[in-house]
Image (cartoon, rainbow, N blue to C red):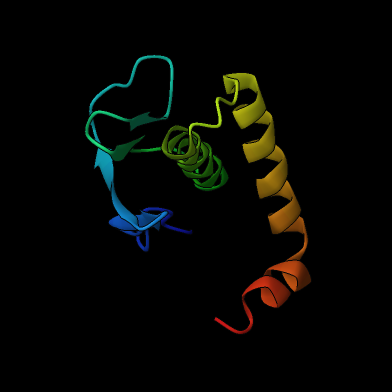
Length: 103
């Protein structure tokens, strides 16, 4: 059984800024994660299924990018992009390999 939180990074660098990733046991209101502009952190709920956890982190990362760049994306667009991007990357291991082979 995969342990999705086992290798979760503690921080993610976004546009030169280290964004802390916090996992909480506290109940989150109607969500599995959130981006907090005021603190510059992403918080994820503990106990979320593996793929859902990954999509949630990607979703919150897109919110962070949106705020940092002032792009003004609608939440519905962030939702769609995170879902589709995750599914494309998951379904295409050769694409993932090509994208990151020289890093």
